[in-house]
Image (cartoon, rainbow, N blue to C red; front, top):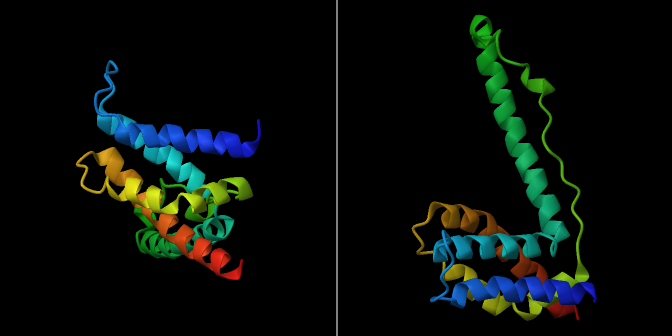
Length: 155
């Protein structure tokens, strides 16, 4: 079995949760299935666009550095109160090494319109987990569109 097959299998299984309305599993709601499917789609998008992942990581590091400097200046002014806290410069941000799958990228580019529809149909969900996952997946989806458009124009 090739990687393409496994990515397609993941994508197809994730799609099923959006369509199944009469599936009854003990303790699992439709919102739970949609949340799980959004997580799978998010991971497929994550491994399909290495350029965006690097940019996103850099943006987060810059943002966290600014916050760190604000906290340090606050603690300097409150030296006696801050004595019990760990030094902020000892905290290290998590750095993730991103890798990209060309097979997964091709699969998502071929199904991009359907993928957008599936994700955007969830935007009215009141489930907190679904809403939080949408906040993570939508920037990846938008960045993937730009990346896919540029690749299609060159090819």
